[in-house]
Length: 270
Image (tube, rainbow, N blue to C red):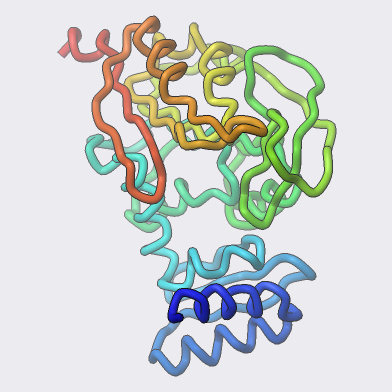
């Protein structure tokens, strides 16, 4: 009965006008003696703020942020097992499927300066990404794949699952530009590439064979998100990473199924 009520409450919240939804959450937060506040930006966008920062995202994703920005960013960071990596100031980080920039949020709140390259093809999420990180220069509205050219992007912003591979459900199809990560191989040593391509992770890796040679760690979301059948990408990603001289370093199967790889060349150098 409790589970049924919880699902009913979630459905009610989803259909509330945004103005009422914001009031609802702010009253709840105030009752909890919380310093977090939410405000409406436009029809679909909200901003959450606390004592340290403000952050914009889709209205349907409020529950992910309701415990604060530090909690949200740490949840994303640890779900990829990135707490096992020793980061240094000015490390280069590539964020593939950056969404609204939650990975960079973690570094900002640490605080630690990293050279951040973000790739997000969906228009809504990219708008929030630029709003959240106004001082970052390397934010690109591009899909990452194994070719350079135009492609379809199947849009589903509320659950942050837009993909260049047709999913079981989506709101619309946008035309976007896709590029290979090897277009950026002129970078020096890369500490981390994080990949969440909603099922297109193998294609991202196939287009990055040269860049991978100078990358120490790669973290990949391999959950069941590929195509209409919602298949996982673990087997294909494992094969490609092993072929490129990477070793599985850690895995997580909490709310997100992720694999963390380390380049064997860097281990040999040490």
